[in-house]
Image (cartoon, rainbow, N blue to C red; front, side):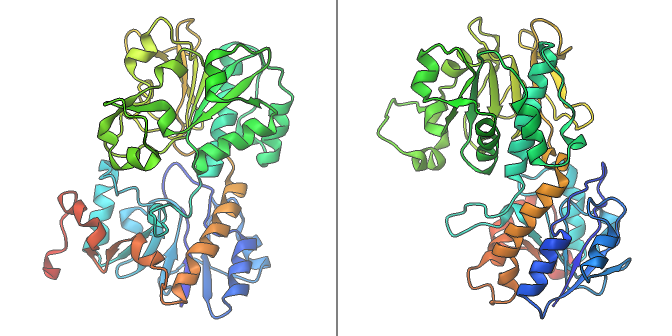
Amino acid sequence: MKFGIIKERKSPPDKRVVFSPAMLSAFKEQFPQAEIRVESSDVRIFKDEEYKAAGFEVVTDVSDCDVLIGVKEVPVDALIPHKNYFFFSHTIKRQPHNKEMLQAIIDNDITLYDHETVTDTSNRRLIGFGRYAGIVGTYNGFRAFGQKYELYELPKAESLTDRDALVARLKRLTLPPIKIVLTGKGKVGMGAKEILDAMKVKEVSADNFLSKKYTEPVYTQIDVLEYNKRKDGNTDVDNSDFFKNPGEYVSDFARFANAADMYIAGHFYGNGAPQILSRDMLRDKNNKIKIVADISCDVEGPVACTLRSSTIAEPFYGYNASTNTETDMHHPAAIVVMAVDNLPCELPRDASEGFGEMFLNHVIPAFYNNDKDRILERSKIAEKGRLTEKFKYLNDYIHENVPHL
């Protein structure tokens, strides 16, 4: 089987890659029968010469490869018919901007596997850049805090070499006794926690966070049943009840909004789940939140002040709670929003290394063991131009190739 590591063509440019030279070498060592080609790229964080030095062939044409592996969506005019692709397609929520691409995949008899749908038997995601989104998003949250209150200046994360360099900068800060609430305990949430712990910010229980005053910065990390409650008042439930019956819940986040200075949103937001931080909470006179680092970045989703995604170049904007509009972040009443939707791009080297390790551990073996754990089967959105059974719900999003019918 021949694998091709493709060039990232989406704009703005993405420097990440699924396999760094080191991880590609580990891939080849583990599966020596694999043939691997690397498509030449002037964008990638790892240079062509680094792959050549590791013994890999760098080419300008990967059309002879069986499986083409990338990070972000492949532009329609770059898709090669009849091939097997693996990338983040961002189509499973019927995202309008990728409708044309998925239609082209169907029309060109392409088989599409999606990084986002690589899961175990319990539907838990196995690979992703979440940890690095959490790391960079939390760094950016503190960067926003420094700018809002003119306390200090932090450089952009993309100007620093790696995660350790971010931590070193953060550890130099002298912070007032602020309270930080973090939602989510998945890869994003744990990436955020990793940074807070590295900074030596004190972790406290949700109850103490809400009831006590502190003379140092503190944070609490809360899970779904701490910021949501059942409409019927039943408290004898566990997380699985929330995930099975999200429509039976309402947000219980107001108590945290009235206690926290900064909100780091690292949760997963599922269909039917209640809004977490509402407009009413934000404009309530008791709301204390002034910085929202929305790492999850669901526009028009669970965090009402996330009016739009922001960019690495311009990561912050102000939110006027009384009018529900964007404003100058330095306005005294403004809540600062950080909603960059491609945060791991700011740490492309670290993010690529970590992602490649996960992909090698969880995905590549499936190509050589007859997919005994059904990793590929579960992650396959389309097969030779037809939607797979799991993703038939996308039929109203695109039209299956008529000659197949």
